[in-house]
Image (cartoon, rainbow, N blue to C red; front, side):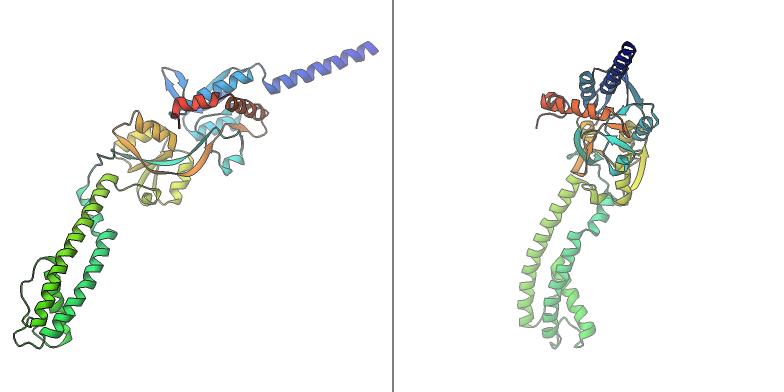
Length: 361
């Protein structure tokens, strides 16, 4: 009896040890869902690479588990693969959001990121659109401000000329009444400001006013021309989209199911979703969309590699978010992956991988 109890006890201990071993690492392959998003995940000649892949390979080695990668088309399919059990976890450019946290478990952040804007051309080569630029000039804040200042300036000499010239028998104001006399005076003041006086007042006080007004006009036009030239130069360099505030009403592309979709809808942009990142970049270059809003690391990598000289990022990184490794809710792998991730950070292995793909800062 004692021997049988001892045997049962040993079997139970052995079973527990096996369970613990399986929970910590196991012997089977881990099915890892991912998607191609350079530089996070890159596929070349059938071999996967990139920041996320190298990071996971380091984690997998510490877990003593082999990896079977499952490539998905977009983040929605990746999350579905994890939720349905087709994959044990997912890694790529997966933003940690409150909505996703309700459905999944996430590792500690693997990368700090955010959204950014990509547009066609370079800082020295922005495609011009003369009609659009002309309309923007007519309704620009600079033009409206200077027109307002000119109107206020015109009112002063116009009233002085009206008050003095209306009683002169040979003056330039043909009537003594305020209306329409003031309009004649304003027309003279505006014409003098824009070009030169076609008539000179007859009264000596009015002539002094006219000379001072012509000098003021020269200075005003010089300042206005300089300001307008500077504004147009900046506009040519920067282009029409330079910040998130410029996305309102614009045709903007992003990938299907990304966090950028929700942001763009809130920003009242015309959102176009694409299944693959390559399709997104192609649509921008083919002028199907005005801009791309997507994860900053991916856009920066494209602008300095395949899209160099064809596209550029503009503005700051906004809508800050972190990337993480996604697990089904309650997955025992999460704890061990976090431990391996911390070990990679402490050993500087994480920093070496980061520097390889994003450079030293």
